[in-house]
Image (cartoon, rainbow, N blue to C red; front, side):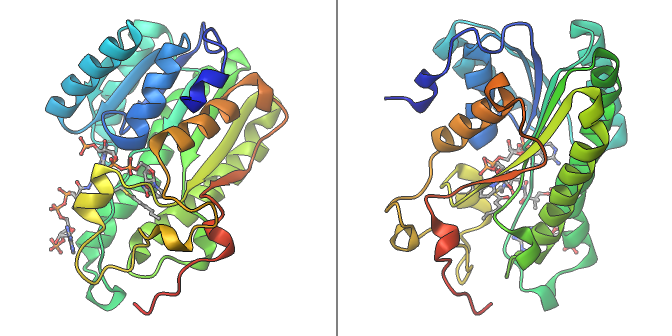
Length: 266
Ligand SMILES: CCC/C=C/C(=O)SCCNC(=O)CCNC(=O)[C@H](O)C(C)(C)COP(=O)([O-])OP(=O)([O-])OC[C@H]1O[C@@H](n2cnc3c(N)ncnc32)[C@H](O)[C@@H]1OP(=O)([O-])[O-]
Ligand SMILES: NC(=O)C1=CN([C@@H]2O[C@H](COP(=O)(O)OP(=O)(O)OC[C@H]3O[C@@H](n4cnc5c(N)ncnc54)[C@H](OP(=O)(O)O)[C@@H]3O)[C@@H](O)[C@H]2O)C=CC1
């Protein structure tokens, strides 16, 4: 059974959701599930081809249309265009899923400034900029939900991916600061920390020879790697009124891997 079948088909009627990196992997699955459950959904990523393919896939699977716009979340002008588009088409957004991210294996001593910037800009700055574009409207409406995709315990570092670990730790800090500051405005801010989910992004960017990325199910107490559906179920829960007294958490969805992380020597 598809895990999202546990959720009411009208759960997100009346909501407008922006999903960054919504054209592939986990973001696409979350965007599809929100669309199927009534939300107006806007997906963004850099690749027009991927966005067009995602629009077709979501329409075929849900019978509903999503909107899309190319947007590099590292670029302030792109984020301004995204804001203008969403404000004029929908009047604002009530849900933001900060899912876009970049990652690649690089031992810390070989990390160039540009490599570091590339990841920190996409993950940390992108999360800040896209949220900032829509939170004013949420505050006016006294209603909003922000979901940041993080990693498990980023404060412990991320050997071989120190740029990503630093960015995700920053995102976790933003999650907590925002949850505290905006709770009184009726806005909830949470994180999801996925365990290893073998998406295209992981295959293309993280599984280089000698990369310490754990894609081995033997370490996972529940005995398998994750799927985009596993992460989507958690996202639907946190974005739904069932989680109305939950804010500021970083929900680990990893089959129990955090109990027994593999040791890396990178
Ligand atoms: C537990 C799991 C947690 C997280 C999982 C995920 O996030 S999964 C999601 C994963 N999904 C994705 O990542 C999807 C999106 N990712 C992407 O599109 C690419 O990975 C990207 C970020 C490189 C593209 O950004 P772009 O076109 O702006 O990049 P650019 O080509 O202009 O290079 C900029 C700098 O980075 C350097 N550099 C680049 N690659 C490597 C490498 N392999 N090795 C070393 N360095 C590398 C490059 O050399 C340059 O520095 P230099 O030499 O000038 O000093
Ligand atoms: N899969 C995993 O094992 C894990 C994933 N995560 C997190 O889950 C999230 C989704 O990852 P996953 O689905 O695996 O990865 P994917 O690579 O499949 O998806 C990442 C998406 O982000 C988009 N993106 C990347 N850079 C930018 C940018 N600068 N501006 C706008 N969009 C951008 C990409 O599209 P495009 O190239 O078209 O821009 C792509 O659609 C990420 O935040 C990741 O860090 C965390 C832990 C584990």
